[in-house]
Length: 391
Image (cartoon, rainbow, N blue to C red; front, side, top):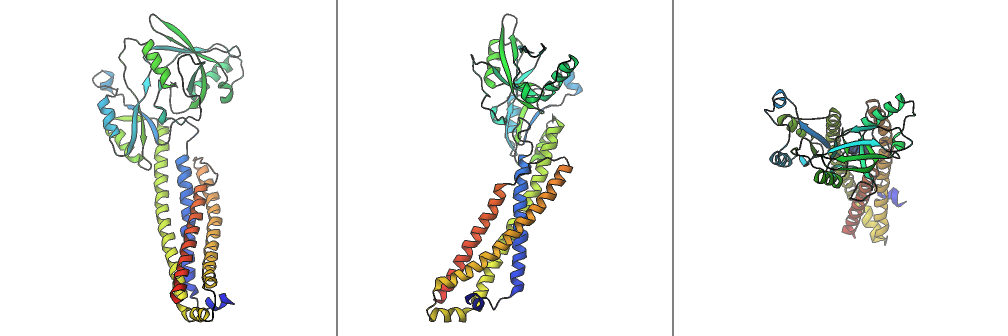
């Protein structure tokens, strides 16, 4: 009876317009937040590099082949790159300045030995999900991150030898050995694989092991920095590309492609997110204004109810519950359409070769819940203020 009395003077057209605006805003809000998160996570776990990180080196030209120009980086050049506003950090990739060979040391695997090139990078640039990424003198083994090309080469060798090929997990159980040496000393160190990468062409070792080898088995050759690890800011990869062209730098095409793709798609979803927030805010204001208009049209009914002793809290609950139900319907429809969008977009990304995580982002759902709570609070205080003005 109370609802029939209070909501008989509605202008349904304004309510429908506000509901449609809120529905569209909420749908695009959830969708944009979900895919913004998933696109930024794209590539994580498949490689050791952290997000928006690339390895760069100077391009080799005819003049550098004739030693007329240098291909290594000076401290001054590294500092200038760091100062760029779109660069989060830049650190040198340290290479071995001592002779090192790598071989199998497992009775279950045929002997395989080769001279190798090892490197190390600052740990903050790595996305290694292992507690084993550390080393000190006297440790049982040296943890290493292996280029996937090496595993392909090892499997080719084993196939040619008539031995079954090995998977990633089995490779991590194989015992390997480093031989560190210079003209006067030699040392052996056991090694174990803890991960693989497609982005780096050398074996990666912890910084402590590299420092140990370069100090104890250092050769007479000058130490040079020929590669840098660069981390760019979100959605500003285009500026990183411009920097590479300007300074004559290059990186692997796969790294550039992923960075460019994440930047473009991330920017697109940021724009959609901004529009969605504005749409939700404006439509929420329209709904609140609609509540105020509805209350003003029912001033006589509200005053009469209060004069005859009707509880103000009951009237407030009536307005509050009505608009909470309205926004609940909007939120439910937004969730339903989001899952339809998600199904279509996941298929589209997959067919385009972008294999993003298809699980639902809890942050996206949380944004809907937060919006619902904020609207509920706004509705309650608007109803309370309107009723007590007549009390």
